Image (cartoon, rainbow over the protein chains, first blue to last red):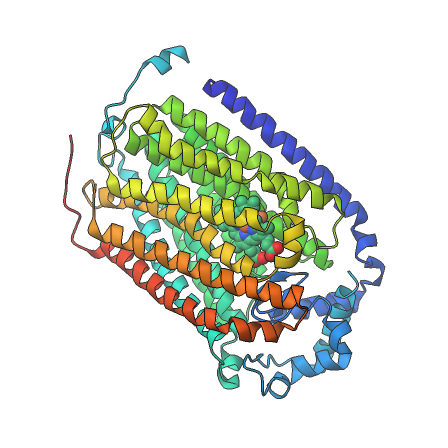
Length: 127
Length: 462
Ligand code: HEM
Ligand SMILES: [Fe+2]
């Protein structure tokens, strides 16, 4: 095989894979709203996502299985422990995990931020 | 074609006559030394992470030094130093390939200053809670713009050098990979309202980097080094370069789907992701075969044993960490159990080290001794560093791997809680701490023997 043939294999292989990939990306955008109940994705959920990022939650926890494996996955935490459980965990981790061998930091989450996080995690539990 | 194939040069080092043919190649030195220093720092931070897994850290410490903050430092240091290493590699090899000096040495230094300055600002920022909070892409948007500026200067500088000089498949592929790499970074910058879309594009950066753009850069750098140290003909090296990267992109682009199984994305990804990503091992096998066999078939001899050791290490490390360990958990049927567990962490460590750390060190060990004034064909420090680090990372991979299997079994098969599993896994994090410490030693040995030790003894061969 010559270098030229190899070059054309490169071009064709790449574009075909890319075409399939972009098609599926388009398809994902088409379906994502239905798949993630985006109608329930209101401003408070978005505010909660901002808090989630600001407090760097994802660098200990996973969500949807992504992120870091130091602490439990939170995708369905709303179903597990409910709004009160979430608020207690983010505002007073030192009490909740007093007996745990792994601690969660107190990140100074305000009441408003805690409520936003609850909205966000309630939404993720329905994906 | 036929003419150049006929010009056979297989006399050992004939592709490698002059020590450092172009003066501007020297900028690479600063990229390399900073990159390797950041590697040492990355491992030191990693040790703290292992301690946090293995022991109970009191609340008082956790509050001021949260795990998440240090983990962000660990991963960002990794990405920063690997990219600086690639850039240094580009500045070293492009003049030789293009047969001219770098377009602007000043811009090369300016760019280094911007990127290192931004990196330091980001790390300090993390310590004060300034973060975008998305793992690996934590750098706040403001600093992202500095990164983009640095990257643009880099691409401009390398691009001008390539365009004004002799054009080879190696520089073409390198430039293509670097442009692709930079473009992908842009998809990681915006704020996405929908978490599913957020992760969707997060993987455009992370997956399409390590299983796409970085593979092109790696293949190009490895092709350059193999061309130099094995004395194989350019035609052969470049033909394999095209074939390997063809396979990398064909499987890797659509293979992104292996991260979209449980994301809330359409089901078609299960098929496409599973099938294409399962084939991702093929280009890696091709790379191993190419590395091992080509020079034998061409009947050339290798004198630069240090670089050869690292090049072979890269090929095999790539195959184990990315090829084999990636393949094991890439099919949806298995990933359903292992997703987001320590299995992932095990794969991440072995793959990054095997493929990209060793690739960078291959290039460093080729270039740095030359930049310090001699060829280095064998070196005790280099070998010690290679084996200590290599065995340490294998040890880490095994620890995380066992922990991951335990975790998968306890959480996903028996259905018990996260902390129940962690309690059973803790022992393995203590063992991991040991390997982390030896990895740190290995990296220090490498740093020392590469940059600080007595200048390498010259064993020139003509
Ligand atoms: C050198 C190349 C590679 C590197 C550096 C690498 C690195 C990584 C890293 C760091 C992650 C974890 C990301 C996170 O969730 O934070 C990951 C995940 C993953 N990688 Fe790779 N990888 C490479 C190649 C491959 C290949 C070739 C395959 C398969 C054929 C593969 C399969 C996977 C899978 C399935 C996951 C997701 C695991 C999960 O569901 O939790 N990787 N990789
Ligand atoms: Fe991937």
